[in-house]
Image 1 (cartoon, one colour):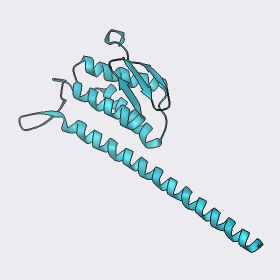
Image 2 (cartoon, rainbow, N blue to C red; image 1 turned 180 degrees about the vertical axis):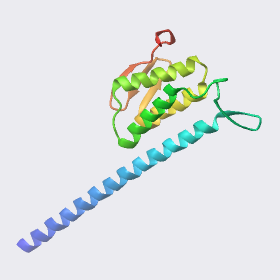
Image 3 (spheres, rainbow, N blue to C red; image 1 turned 30 degrees about the horizontal axis):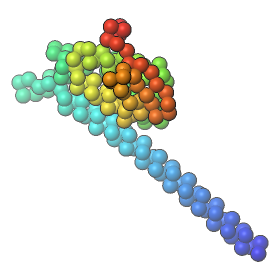
Image 4 (cartoon, helix red, strand yellow; image 1 turned 90 degrees about the vertical axis):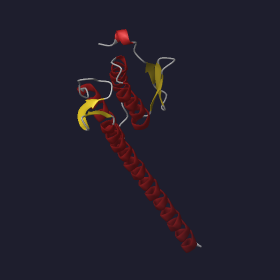
Amino acid sequence: NQALQNQIALQNQQVMQNQAIQAALAAAKTQQTNQALLIQQAQAASVHMVSAGGGPTGIPAGQPGGSMSPEFQKAMQIMAECSSSGRVAQDSEVEWLIGVREKLRYKKDFQSADDMRNSLRNSIGVELYEKEKRWATADGRQGSIPMWNDLQ
């Protein structure tokens, strides 16, 4: 009877170990998927470059004569870092990221603004509600989207 109980306990332990391994593999796969998504987004951003004379000029669509802003690059870097590390973006970071996106929209760089909106959603789980001028996360945090005249 004791030997049977020991065997059952050992089997239960093995089942739990297998479940833990499966959960770890699923988490790793999710992280790899997120990283692949970020790579695709970065590649998509480079595809949206305006070309003149048959080749890429390095000028993003919507920004004649300019290049991708350092703020946009920093924003994409922050979202990629949060996604790859699993770190939750702080409210202040989310507000800054949304501010960067609003500046892009103000400058009529809609492609970059759309790329940021997609990265906010897919990388750090921030959903934007434009009509209500608010944002929300899956964990319940929320805030307002700034008005253009409030941007610096």
